[in-house]
Length: 374
Image (cartoon, rainbow, N blue to C red; front, top):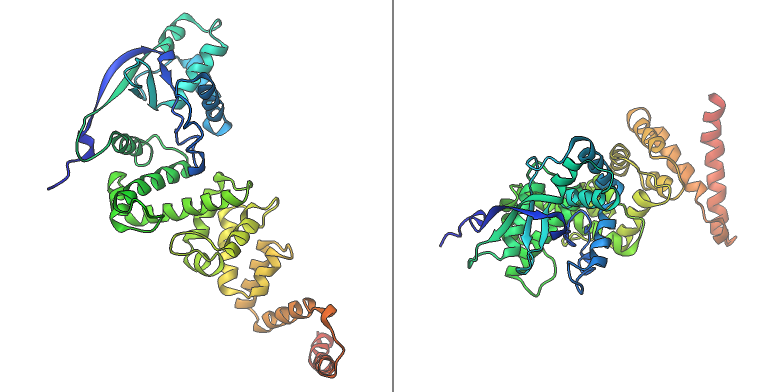
């Protein structure tokens, strides 16, 4: 039997309610980008003042531009019809959980709690009572209410015009995938299951490969967050490049089939991207590092990650070696080898002395001659 479209199992009803009947969503993707944060409010009621105050604080950060929304409402008035607020009733209480519009409701709350006495009457009236679209789930055997809401919001923010940030999208896609995956394997940990991937790709109008790519990014982001507090979700594009550059991901970062890095890979990606003064700060530098790794030598990578040489400098050196002079590359390799000699391990035995004497002879016979001829 064909499963009906998920979009047939809800309806939206236009209602008018007081702004203080609206409660912010504690699982809003703008504030929850890690599965570890999912349990933050599990033991409390959504309507609890302390929980709501904490959500407001977590939403009111620079990247969410709440103050910009506040200024827009104060200067231009409340444009109710431009982007409808979606909400669902909380347990027949006449209070509503905001599904879509948490930023706008946060801005309204901020105005009415900090500037209520100073705003003009027209603006005040327009935001004290709000037109809202009330979500009504239609019971069915195919999809839970959570499934239907997930796809509805995903279509708005992933494939629609009201976009979340890149990592917020990634987390949402990952959660959607895991929910689908658990339908087939309820006791299993993460693995790649194409039926679940295809279901997510259809729900959010994405290509299958884009879903897999997004899962790789989120899995690594979550893994890095467990071992370091320096991992910044704003570096999404660099994590993307790291795990989706096939050779680097497999050989250097040691990404496995479950989209997790080895311990060595974790250390390498943290050094490259998230140190206090990391070698790589933008996609251009990452692409140069990729070129160095694929076309240079191990000592070129060490020059960046251990000895603090800039990616740009090493990139130019590798390009020069490949395009101009094979001898230059061999000389650089020799230099790095000599500089990294573990002198403290010198035992002074006859074999080591003979090797040193032979090297000195070669240096005198070949390298000093070249230097003199220059």
